[in-house]
Structures are given as structure tokens and as C-alpha cells.
Image 1 (cartoon, rainbow, N blue to C red):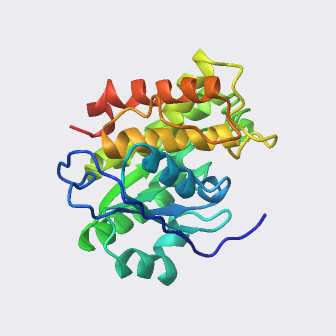
Image 2: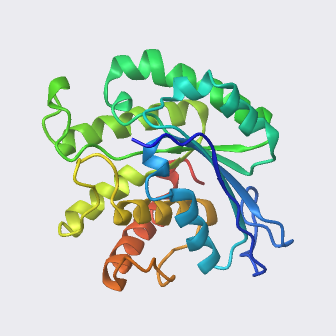
Amino acid sequence: MKILSILCCLLMFSVGCSPAKSGEAKKTGASLRILFVGNSYTYVNDLPEMFTKLATAGGHLVETGMVAKGGWTLAHHANSSETINMIKASKWDYVVMHEQSQIPSTEASRKYTMYPSAQYLVTIIRQSGSTPIFFLTWAHRNGWSEKGMRDYESMQSQIEQGYMEIAQELNALVAPVGHAWSQARKQYPELELWQGDGSHPSELGTYLAACVFYAVIFRQSPEGLKCPVNISKENAQSIQKIAAIVILQYPKQWNRL
């Protein structure tokens, strides 16, 4: 697996932004700055770049940065001077973070590994003047049978519980990509959201994540926006619709008032 140390995707566009509220896109012409902290779930298919292009299609000025290393946990990031310095070095509007794919699905791992690291990182993020967002990820296609989760649904349920508990404790925003993933599977089972390994996202899976972040950050539907060249218009419309419904119809569920 390719290890990515730091990848900063910085794109600026001279287009108008939507009306701003606290922490949203600005009317002044300044870019909204977002840092993604994660692992291969973030850098496979380059989620920050895909989100940037989607935001640009919607008329938003965006700059993104990424700190992502293969297999890294929040504990790795919490103990990494590279990550902490990246958070502190620049005035980010949002800092997005996610855990390694399996850790949120077991109570012991959440309690002793995920939550202490998340608490520390959220403190650093807020001290730096940024808003934290938890990137609620998706389960493995076949679950995690070694831990008693014999299918996707049982693992996804535990992952959602893991993220929502800490997000509610810390009063932090949630980008429920995994929940939207679950809804997409139910409504459009023909869509291939995973790669062949049943863990990492296909390009369509990453596009779903980008659409969820668009709806969470801008409080707008991504429906009708231009889609990536490798994704059919029909599939893109299905994904856009799912993201809009999950986020915009039930905002309080994800700590968005």
C-alpha cells in the first residue's frame, strides 16, 4: 500500500460563494479551508481533490489539505508532531478526521484507543480556531466475523454507534458517510461502492463521501452538480440524492442545528 506522508491539494477559483453563516462558505471571496486527517480511506481516489472539484462546481471557493498515512489510527495522529503541526500551522475552517476502519466497531477499542485520541485532537483543533468534523466511515462489505460482526449491517451499526457517542460527548459535527453508504446500498444495490477488497472505496464510494461533505459543510444539496468524468450521470444523480436526503432532511441527527 502506498504510504502518503502529506498531500496538500490547494485549489482556488474566482467564483461566488453561497451566503455565509458561522463556519460556512464566506461571501468575502476568501476560500473555505479544510484539512483532512486520516488514512487510506481518505487518500484512495483523493477525497480532498474530489470534494474540491464538487465544491467548485457548486460555486464555492475551497482550499484543502491532507495528512493521511496507510493504516493510521487517530492515536497515530494524536502522537504525530507532523499532524499536530499541520493542524496548528494554518488557519483551517474545518478539520475532518476519521479512525482506522475497524476500531470504531468494538467497544474496547473505542474506549481505550479511539475516544482518548479523539478528545485530544478535538481540543487541539478548537484551540487552533477550527471546527472539528468526524468522518463517520463505512463497514467492510462482509463485516468482521472474527469479532462477531458477520455481515455489513452489524458492523455498520457498531461503527455508527462508535462515532456518534464521541461526537455527542464533544458536541462535534458528523459527516455520516457510512450512514449514506448504507442507504445507497438499500436503494441502489447495483452501485459498486467498494473496491475488490471489500474495504476501500471505489471511485463511486469516494464520490459519495464528497457529496456528503458538500451537504454537511455548505448546507446545500449537491444534486445537479457536474460529476467526475468516470462516473455516469445516472449513478452520480443517485449518489447526490442520497447525500441530500441523509444530511439535509435530518440535520439535527448529525449535530447540525
